[in-house]
Image (tube, rainbow, N blue to C red):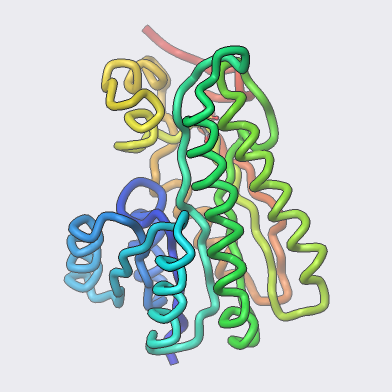
Length: 254
Ligand code: 8X3
């Protein structure tokens, strides 16, 4: 029977790339996100490529919406063996002393409480599958702080804490927890969301960087971790572009 993988934040970037990749690996993918039109296009693309996917409109900040995702999982054509908590994002690059409470609230709600809500809701189905995998897409900002990144780093550190705690608490049950920490990834929307639609500011982050990661690079890492034999737990995978040796050590040309 086909295994089912659930990917949140699947309408763009790392989430969409992960949905495509997992479908190519043979999963039936439940692609979950708020934007139904984007999901419909993604599902059509996956289906045209010979894969299986279902769109599920879902806002990870809503209990009711996540309950709908659980119902969709129950109707899916196979056991739910994989959950990729990918929904998230950054807002603002302000110093802590002037950071916007609204931005910080949004980042905490989506990244942290979204991961908590979706994971809690789907744990029974993942465990019932006999071998469930929970992926938490955090960030190198979950390991290291940087100026202006306080709100995002606080949220990502919290996600990292959730992943580590969950792995301890689930030890002995047929569930594994994988944390993925990408560094600089050039996606269509991460920077636009962070800078409130300012495309120039978003592009400047990657200016001159020879080969930032792209969404498919991270999807590749997620797929590799999630398809290891079930007794293997890749606790944490940190992935950066070669040109980014550390948060502040970025090689730029030109
Ligand atoms: C990685 C983004 O801002 O830490 O998630 O480079 S950042």
